[in-house]
Image 1 (tube, rainbow, N blue to C red):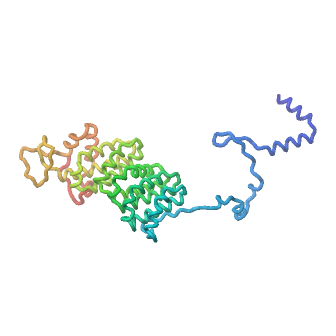
Image 2: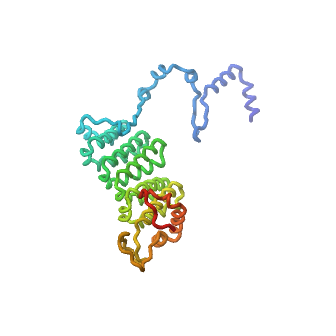
Image 3: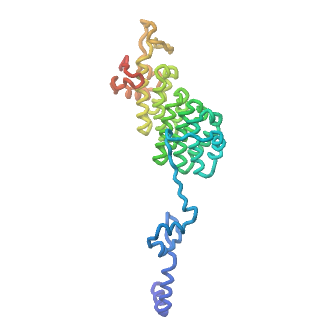
Length: 349
C-alpha cells in the first residue's frame, strides 16, 4: 500500500507535489491533551515573537484587563464603619451576592460590625452565620480565607451567643483546616483557636465530641486538638462537674486513631485528667460512686479508688490498658502544671 502511494505521488507534477506539501504544513495537527483528542492549531508567528506588554494589554478583552486583589486585614487593623445602620442593611445582600468581591467586602463589614457594633448585629446572627458558612464553601480561596477570618472575629465578639448556630460552622472550619490550600488552612486553624478560647468549654465540648467520631481522619485530628485545648479551660471543678469519666472515654477513643495528631492530643488530655483525678479524687468505698472532697472524714474501712481502678471501671479492658500505659510512662514532674500549675500528684501507679 505504501508503494502504491509513493507511485501515485511520483506520478504527480512537481507543482502539485509542492502545493500538497504546503497544504499539509498549514493543516492543524491532531493531538491529545489531558487524555482527550482535540485539534490544536499551530501557534501563530505573532505569538512566538515577544511583544510589548502595552500592546498585548490593548488587544485583550475588557474582562481580562481587570485584576482584583483582595486585602486580608488583621482584626486589629480594621477601621470602624461610617454608618452602622447602612452597613447593617447591606450585609445580607452582600453576603448572598454572586459577585465574589462583593461577598469579601460584606464579610469584612461583618467583622467590623462584630468588633465595633456587636450589639447592633446580635439580632441578625441567625441569618449572618449561615451565609458565612456558605462563604466557607465557596470555591474561591480568597472568599474562604476571608470567611475564616470573619468566623474568628464572630467567636471573639459573641462568645456563647452562637452556640445554637455552631454546628454547621464548626464542621466547615474543621474541613477547611484540614483539606484546603495552606493559607486557608492557617486561617481556619486560627478561627478554631479563637472558638476554643472564647466559647465556653461546657457548651463547646458536646459539639466537639461527635466530630471525634467523624469518618474523615483529618477532621478527627483537628477536632481532637480543639478538644485538648478546651478540657483545661474547664478547671478542676469544671472537669468534675462535666464528668471526668465522659472525658476519659472520649480521649481514650482517640488513642488508637490512625493519625498521630489525634493520638498526641488524646495523650495530652489523659495526662491532664489523671493529674486532676489524683489531686482531687476522694477516698470512698469501692462500691459507691458518689464523690466527696478531701476535707471529708476518711472511713477507715474504705480503700482509695486509684486511677487504675477508675480507668478499669469506666473503660473496656483494651482501652483501660492503653490509657494506663500512656499515663504511667510519664513522670509526675512532667504532668505538673498542665491543669493545676505547681501541684503534685497525690498518688502514682
